[in-house]
Image (tube, rainbow, N blue to C red):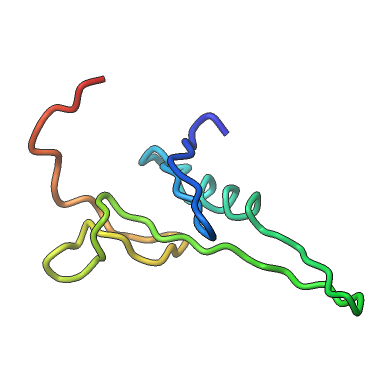
Length: 91
């Protein structure tokens, strides 16, 4: 997925970023589908381990003081970014 960039993978977490665009919901759902795992118990019963995502424009938790922070992913989230970067990031 060229529009999705893997940033880190730790014990039980995958961190990736997606461009803020109209397809963002589709990209997050596709990434969640790719990390979904099916496990088989010794008794033969299968289990699905789903992924979940949080989305936002900074690493803080979303709240009244930080509306741009991370919140649980919901398709069709109507939040809009309220703060832009205060500095230019080198490319």
